Length: 286
Image 1: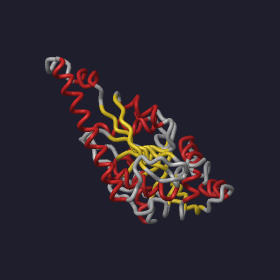
Image 2 (image 1 turned 60 degrees about the vertical axis):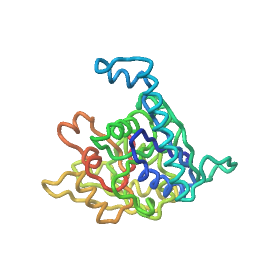
Image 3 (image 1 turned 180 degrees about the vertical axis):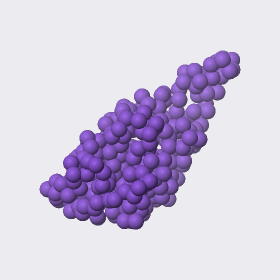
Image 4 (image 1 turned 135 degrees about the horizontal axis):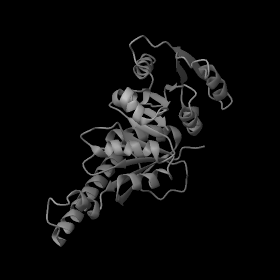
């Protein structure tokens, strides 16, 4: 499977630069194109949120529409400026399927519905790590993980110059991890180095890192196994992130929410720990 279509969703008031940088660095290795999707709430969504707080009139609706048009125009101009700085063609007419360029699309409506449909016709969605001050970021990640059925790349504070220099896979044999590996073979094949890390738990012998390395070898991917001992009092998520940092990983890959989100919220879990604290890009699938 080739990864040709990278989707970068954004919204009014968000700076997509880090996600665009990550998308570009991946696309140059994968020969993919970058589709930027601008999602703005429709007037009905804004009015529903304002219900009971302000009078609704034709002037109010017109002001909402004009505000969204202005935000979209500002976002498009910012993308065009980024393309000019990075030397990326913007909306060209190309015949080659493996060309790297950027396109701009505008959508109106609820984030979850719009992103679900858009993500299902993309190969990879690139989102920010959730920020409580920006509700869109959390909604975008949740939608990418639970509704789309494709891998999601969460970008933290650090965007390495080459995301595929060293990919570290956190492996526990879960269904979610299996889906991630299966959907990311092309990305792993393009990586310069791959390491499979397995935390020593009571189920460590059921799904060994060496077995995944042997499977990847059949796909022409040379991966090295590494067993991780989790110190007492340290969470598995923190141990994985620490190990990935010590290995100079440029991308961490793991299956997301192998336990329910409710359990992870109440008791903590690997996915929650990684999402809340990872500074490096993290590739996930549920």
